[in-house]
Amino acid sequence: MRLDLSGILVCVGCGTPLPPEASWESTGTRCAGCGAEVPVIRGIPRFVASDAYTTSFSFEWNRHKKTQLDDAASRESEETFRAKTGLTPEEVAGRLVLDVGCGMGRFADVVSRWGGRAVGIDLSLAVEAAHANLGGRENVRILQADLFRLPFRHGSFDIVYSLGVLHHTPSCERAFRQLVPFVRPGGRLCVWVYGTMGPWERFARLYRRVTVRMPKRLLHTLCHIAIPWHHVCRLPLIGPLLWTLFPISRHPNPDWRVLDTFDWYSPEYQSLHTFPEVYRWFRSEGLVDIALLDFPVAVAGTRPESGCEAG
Image (cartoon, rainbow, N blue to C red; front, side, top):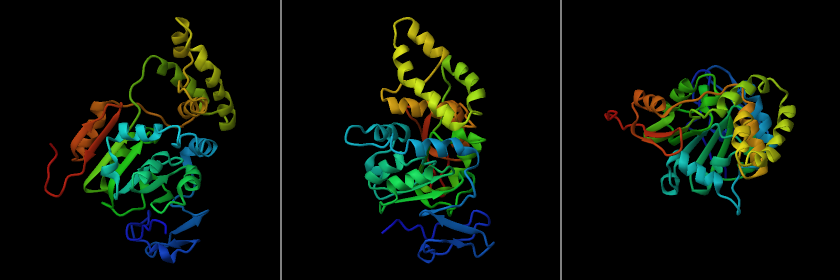
């Protein structure tokens, strides 16, 4: 039996609670307040009409739908999830967890394996890949939705996290502030955003002026240069200079190198942030027990119980 979200789903237009999911069947539902429709297409409730500014991620995650999923040979996504959230399996087990910007489901997969009840949302058509990867699990649900108009009742989730997503929106800070109300009092909010980079980032940002306008298939093909270029950049003396001038992913796995390089050069929006900046966001929203994690820039905090003050 699939994870039932009845009781926490609301209309993104007017906030009216939506009917119990059992009444949706396979076609969707309609808001009793404003009449807005929520279709179910290929098994996924759709709270948006398009993927808007996330078309690069629609392409990316359906092309690389399994590249970052953990398997018997690697637990890299699980290790990354620990590092960027500070969470443990014991803290996740049995909790209702919201993955904001789930992509193809790499971290929702971790939450699911740890015994959490994972709800993944994404504006892009990456939800197609996430649903294919995880939709058959009883403790996972995938929805297509905009983080600026989330279809949930406030205070619904024990844990909310967003890893590598907020900096790809028109306003990273505003996106962060959208998430806080959906954390229950006493619940945890975890985010990871891009930090400031080294000299190579200046060249990469210069190239992005062109690459973000390129056809996605062409750019993805060009990103395959990352496979041999990785080895060139390991040459003594000249290698580091070449990598600074023409930066690509240095992941040891060739498929990851192509994916990560495309992920850097293709998104329409991309911003960089600092620990003090993100810490101020947490403080200004009244979050407590704020932790600056070892992975830049990863920060976690707790939404206080009623009557508690930020410290």
